[in-house]
Length: 327
Ligand code: ADP
Ligand code: MG
Image (cartoon, rainbow, N blue to C red; front, side, top):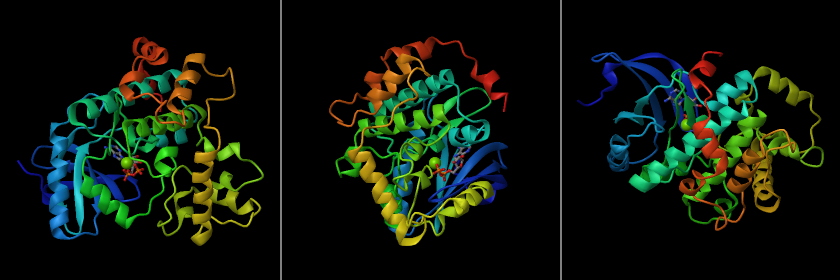
């Protein structure tokens, strides 16, 4: 049966993103709890219909590491995408709540993301394109799944038209305009894993005094009216206290800062799991191989599944269900 907006009862908001909001809803006819993502699409009805058609591929995506799809529909001027709700939310909200995530858990995250990416590419020739902690979800059964992959070319185009979103998880080759490949997702995975293991975005601290990069949040979008709204009150106060270095996060100044960050990613050595010795050697080595700046040298998700750290993570007996019950 087809999903209709009238059958969905809002329960609460799960989060806000660049393109819209995500709500927890109940599908009244069946009692199914779902996450409903509302995406505002500034496009012709024909394009909206095309997007809807392309999204149907998600009906064929079945993997333990991929969020299940319930259906999508147009609710003018929005497109609503209904998917499996994950009750522990995304990994960015988890680490912001409990701090740096234990490296053994991070190993399970790496394994799940690589499995999900390998499934998407091997079975459907889909490249994710947006790997970041907020697109890696967790539930109280201890499952880790990825969401928001690029199934619809038209949707990608439409969002690119409306939002000049600049993701800081972007690989050097993508910043320089090269084609997207599965290896670009591997770079984004490497950045995400460091962020989870350190409990902070890896580009933020490396550049202390001589640059404004310390002002960066995880993801920036120049079209967001006021990025400071995404910060907590505490973070805002801290920012106000911080001496201004001439580049503000708002308005035109922010665009400059984004360029600086992108330049940094292209020109400087990739971040690493530091300090040296704090994490297992195998984990350090895995992250290093995700963050090889030359995409030809970087491995594919499928090859990385054979990495010693991932093989070790696969057999590790850490109980994620118990871990989930601690927060
Ligand atoms: P972003 O991924 O950039 O944060 P989204 O609009 O995709 O923006 O999602 C907003 C937030 O909603 C996410 O950060 C996540 O915490 C939450 N969310 C998204 N999808 C789900 C889901 N299926 N189950 C639970 N929470 C979700
Ligand atoms: Mg998302």
